[in-house]
Length: 126
Image 1: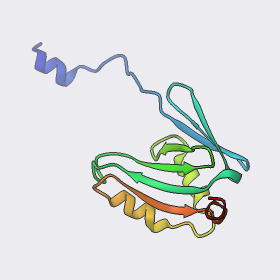
Image 2 (image 1 turned 180 degrees about the horizontal axis):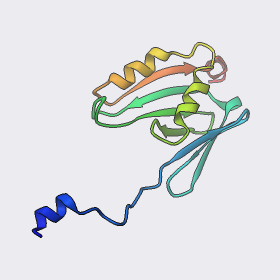
Image 3 (image 1 turned 120 degrees about the vertical axis):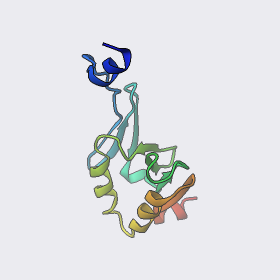
Image 4 (image 1 turned 135 degrees about the horizontal axis):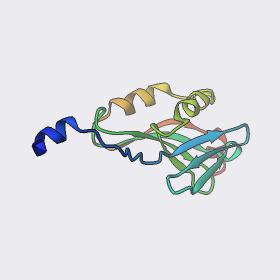
């Protein structure tokens, strides 16, 4: 069997799956678990801003990220992370959440940040 035939017809016996990041949340906080097991936590009570960051690969080329900013730092959650769909549903319940920003980010072909929500407390405490 030629190399090309084997390449086209043989299946690998070992499938290596890269571990995904995941995001979970409850009534107190959001926890983003990175591939290496490191966890980033944002308390809902400290949340100041939610944005979506688009990469310059265009809508078909890559991922967008949910940027959750709190008083100390925050976290950047890939939209393809396990649990990201559920997180988006929860974020959409924030008062005055801008769904249009999600749509613009998904269509973006440039590196850009789209503001979805800003805490009223965040404005007064800065």
